[in-house]
Image 1 (cartoon, rainbow over the protein chains, first blue to last red):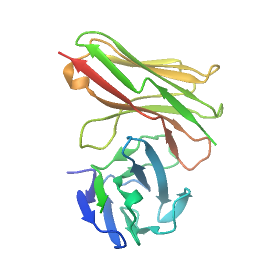
Image 2 (cartoon, each protein chain N blue to C red):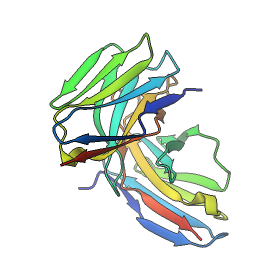
Image 3 (cartoon, chains in turn orange, brown):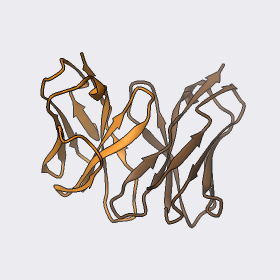
Length: 114
Length: 113
């Protein structure tokens, strides 16, 4: 009964490759997010979707493209991977507009670019 | 844009002692202040939160205080236990209606048995 799940948990790939990370939530939430956590543990929002509509798009290279096929799924596709993309990527979800703001995080995907 | 500063970056205490982590923020319109705990190899998990119309909130051994005038809020953990060892993040919800959270830099808490 995992609330927010991500696949894969670990991803090791070479520079220049294209890879995707998948996220699914079974909480019935309307809003999903992607965060990047760097080697210093700093957590930064990348994107957010509400009911399949992009509502947050931070200053992220356009090699990163989120896709939300439905409100329970938010995938992250990364083109032409670079060394600096190595990080842990977290997916999260929350309700929207109801006053309940808690964000539920997935277990993370550790991406290593060599 | 909103800026959140968190201190200290590391904190080491003896089991049973108290731990305090402090955060300051810049946007006076912010209205929601959560604290997340991240254990090794896991995603952050909400442990307590406070809204701008409340000055203090307590849940067993953890409490959060908010000073809106000074734009700072703090996490207090009493009677610390080894299982409290983790990275703690404060966050501030942006005053925009996107639900965006801006996180502090994190505090690594070590509780020594």
